[in-house]
Image (cartoon, rainbow, N blue to C red):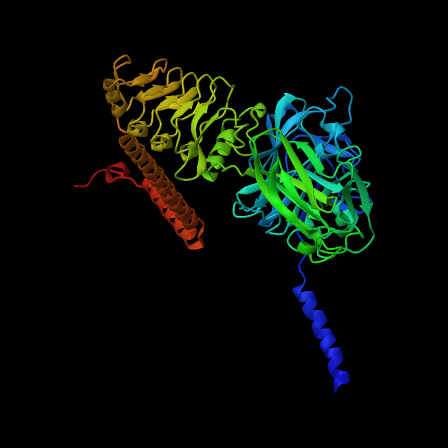
Length: 621
């Protein structure tokens, strides 16, 4: 019995392990400018072709660093295409992601070898390239941990006037929902921008994939650092297996803990200093594993961890906290930094030396609140209808990042709705040639519209009368035609209305004329067909819109009746002719016709030969 039961149990356990195994994380890698999918060595990493994600121009690429993916193309965005350009990547499952953007250099003469521009993810600026970035491996890409919740990812590049943004590759890699959880202030409204990742004592820069890391780790890049300062430390390394490394939620590779920096007798403290942006919050992750064979017991190595002079961890004993040698230990602290430097110090207390295996530093960035989706859709409709010049861009989010709002759209933060809204449009004298769409009324918070000095044609949408907050409406010197909508008289907040210099006609609505008595500034001049208020010609007999429609409808009915009568008469006449023709062609009808004709001829003949009695002789009385 046992012989048959054992295989069944093994099969059951195998199936259960497969069903309970965690699925592979979502991964999207784009080779910018590529026309076909490619794979790169040494890990045979797949990269999708760049198709239908954005605008810009594909070109051959120069890799700024050997850590950049070995790809041959990129996509760049000339300023003539607008100051903001974005990759919009759809069908991204809701979740937590590591988003990484590699920068490139256009492989063409006369191109700026080092363009400077800003980068935003989901409307939040995460990077501003500084001069010299191409000479530093860590600055050839921007990386952040972000929650994507609406099924898409928006990555935008903002020109700063110093060369055209050029993008070599994009990676969107799913990580654990709780990856890099740093305490009560951690939330989906936070973005962690990678400032640095250091693998202490390592010889070469590596990605997690190079170390056979778990895919749920996000394929992090680790910069090697061989010393914190001359003669201040020494390198130790081992080949032993490391316990508790690749575990949820961060899944670090074991190789990260197989090397370390250890302080020396001449410099007992280990001190690392890096430049940071001031007045920001930084989350710092310390990685330890006791790989020094000379430390065998708890209490033999104890040290404090200081950040900018403040003790953040006291009496750190790696063996005690991790549970034994060759076992990973991760400590985290998030602090506010007011100055421009971040100083990390490991200060020994028991034993003579401190040790560290790796350091990660993230800037904690509050995710920007986005613009109302309804208002974004309305602006995109407006962009299309007005044939907005390409130089405006109008890509991404209209209001965020706040450093790069759309030109011509004024933003206001709506505290009640926790969203950005549009309260002003200033597109005067921009060479616009389209029409004003009804969707403009979806910009419900507008207080000012200035479209003067363009060539916009068509009627003024009656829906503008529903924008109740509107105070200024300037449509002067365009080619608007038709009548002024009655609905504009409902705008009780309207102070300035300029409709001069168009081709409008008809009576000015009475409600607007009455507003002139309340110190409103209205201008209707240079419209040959307008009438009805002082300063304009008097109107003749005036029919309301309903009356005009009634007359038009009546005329249409009369026309249809006449056409129907004519058609009926014509058909009746055709039927009569058809019957007469049929009667003439029948045999009986032909015989009767011939008989009638013979009788008539005989009668006519007899009449010709009959004589009166007086003609044949004397009359006998």
